[in-house]
Length: 295
Image 1 (cartoon, rainbow, N blue to C red):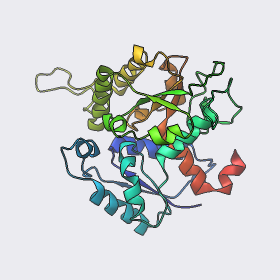
Image 2: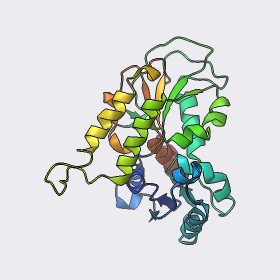
Image 3: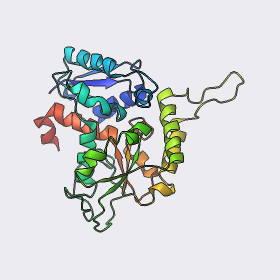
């Protein structure tokens, strides 16, 4: 079993949630069966969103320092649970001698395999049979919802991407999706603005339920309230022709900590968690044959 290095803090709650899901998705029967993990959480990494928007310094030097630190501490696999930070992965991979598992490639592979598409991008009828790890979530990090027979189509599977604005601006998924005939679609401007508000709230934690100096509640009342906002956005007109939704920014799966929570999305949509997909890929890479024997 190989030691995993997690580059957390991007943001902190998303990194903590990724570690939790890594543990939950590991085929372990006791403490000794779990994956050795080194978690480095440095929230002082310059904002990727600000840098990509042209308003802040590059995060690459700090990210490089942290990846090297993980390697020096013994990590043999590195996971970066942040879609926006994946924009810098090619640069970071040149600076370390251990693999950084690609969140983008893993998400694309899972959607291509479980998202009713073939290599040519043709939609398949129904779904393939697959094992489950817990309460309705497939081992690849998707919900077993929204899998009704939609027939065939030459338009490819239409996946709505809920993520940061730079994810769209820099076409993070376009190249990988195109190789599998997957069509990425994005929210309208107003909905995207609302998604960014949710992401910022999770990053800031907003001291949920706390009171201001005037005694009145301040910030977001709860993570549950944010989750309701996300599912409401997924019910707006921009999403009406979608086959599935990708919770691309890793702040968003924080709001749906169990597979049961995904039931709040419109029933016709298959929901993909970038966090669960990456965690499953890391478990597979770290456990190797042990993981395969438990499938």
